[in-house]
Image (tube, helix red, strand yellow):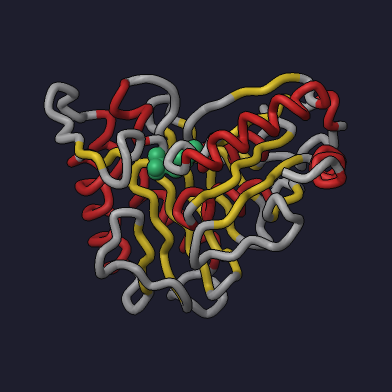
Length: 267
Ligand code: LIP
């Protein structure tokens, strides 16, 4: 049983969530790219498309039918903004800017959280057909194949993936300043534009570390669990546990790399 939340056991529940995510993601790969219905939200960098909303509507309808009584916290939320209790935490398209520009990675991310405890997570990048799934205490998989524990690399050997917090100009500048001060401690830096994918790429060893100064719970709820289940250190950039109600900073990485990053000068 998924922490007493649903009918099945954790792995059965996870398989059902993964099927729902994969189905909804077909809206992305079948999108009419000449008619994305793109609109601005909080700034010229913060966009939403008709497909974000369509994917979210399909996810919510299917999850509500399959998991009656479970709440929702969704990026395109409105009334679907339950910030505590048992809830699905949904980013219908994480990496919307990439989706709009037809570049990089963009994924459907669905987490299931009980208060501040992650229970399940699915992140599916449909263009590369890579689906990451994790249930708390049961490890993580990529396309159904178990992921090994992360290699505990040093910070100097780590490809460090950066989230630039583009919706917050002050944090964007603080991120650039941090890189100017500390990137020389890393092997090199990368920037993808999807925190959900970035956390999963820490889990599968592509990156030794990922950080971003401000993320919403839907950006990281699923991916952070995938990373944690693969032995990565996961928390805030201040070294605190993640919470799932409001925006927080996120750090995920090989334990030695994360420790060295946290010991370094302030952010
Ligand atoms: C995005 C994150 C990304 C971050 C962007 C944005 P969205 O999510 O995954 O890491 O840098 O600011 O928050 O908005 O595309 O769902």
